[in-house]
Image (tube, rainbow, N blue to C red; front, side, top):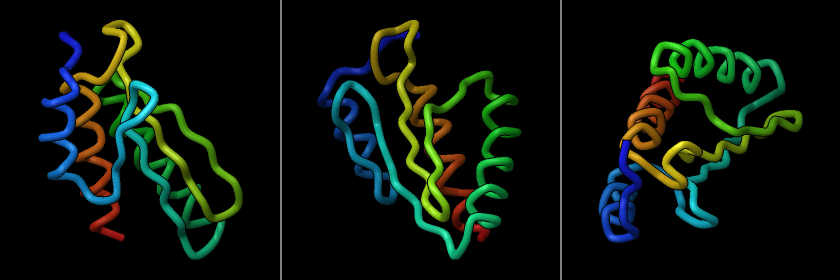
Length: 95
């Protein structure tokens, strides 16, 4: 999969909620009510990520989850990253 240009990334990121682009990846930070909700969300994303064969870099501290998406094989952000970001946003909408 081909790496997207900065212009393409900026155009696509405008369609996402609370995502930013820096350090050659797209990022979001999500705050939940408690650890259980954060971990449950991560579990739901894990199933979707596995189905898409594309896995996030993320951290979790108590009720906060930080997600970074990049396609390492392509050396940057690709359509796969935006597909997973859209899935993450959809899962958040179901919360």
